[in-house]
Length: 120
Image (cartoon, rainbow, N blue to C red):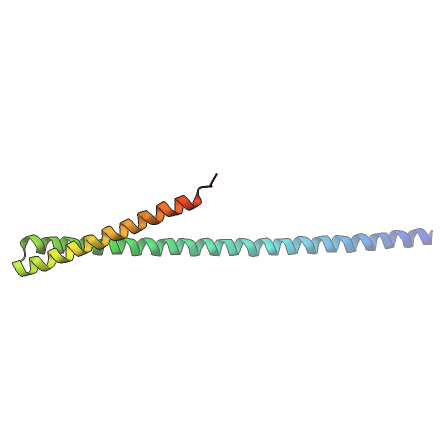
């Protein structure tokens, strides 16, 4: 009877050790999950801040560009002849630069699409 009781106690101790190992593993998995969740939340917040900052910069740049364009157009049409000539030269050089930049962007997009297509 004592041998049987010792064997049962040994089995119970092993069961307790396994139970403790399982609970420790569950706790470790919970900590890892919490850490991964917090990291993903932080990355998501950073991406939202970047997008918000980029949107504000683009919007502010657009507003400044429209105001500058309006001012130059006003000066070109209603300003004194000297100021009108300067405004027209700024407008033409700005449009040439914008057109050149647009051509470069379009050429870059065409090149990127050509490089992405598989060659048969």
